[in-house]
Image (tube, rainbow, N blue to C red; front, top):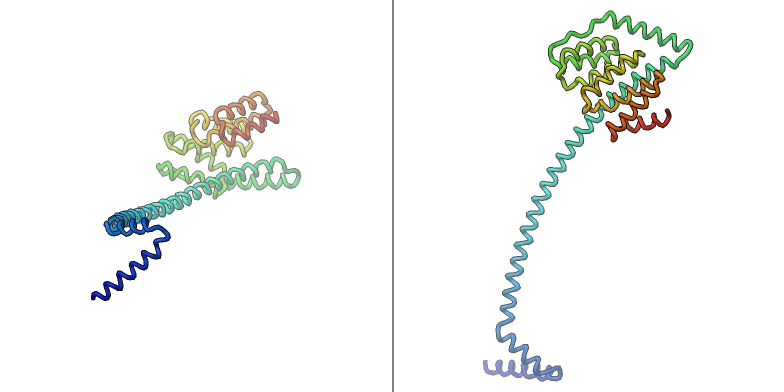
Length: 264
């Protein structure tokens, strides 16, 4: 046991001797510091800090996981809402396409000449005859059901005269329905396609006067201006187009009105 101690002491002496050229004072200070236990205190402190940081990191990871779950849930809800909105937009596009097709059909019949005009007139007479032989759908007493039935006469059955009769009865029977702006707009469009511009302007103006906050109002007012322009009443047409721009400045109808004004 003593021999081992002597060997250890000898080795320590040799190490001190080798380190002497580098500075005996520094070597003695390091040994003194280690012997004081300050290193152990530092290690203990570092361990506590490390444990606290590990716990904090675990909490942050859990919070990130929870946040990711919330984000995934919100993303799913947003996708569902987007799908529903796209369905509504697509339905609106279909309705506007139907309206445009009605307008195009009316303009095409007026612009055609010779055999085309005769054929169009014959087709119109045949359709009018079939419409006259068919009665308008009976009203059920439910505003939504009756409105849909009247619109079906336009979009599905192409019975425009019957649709006018049905919609006129509908606007009188259900004055408080939220579909009033749409029904009056349809009447304005149907009369316009028949070439009855005064009747058409009346129903378009009704939309603007009674339902100014309706999405149909800007286009209805614009179409009143178009009718005035087609009747060569330039002064009224200008006044109406200016009103569209003033009353509905951010609408597509305002942009169209601006183009019309530039051409007057």
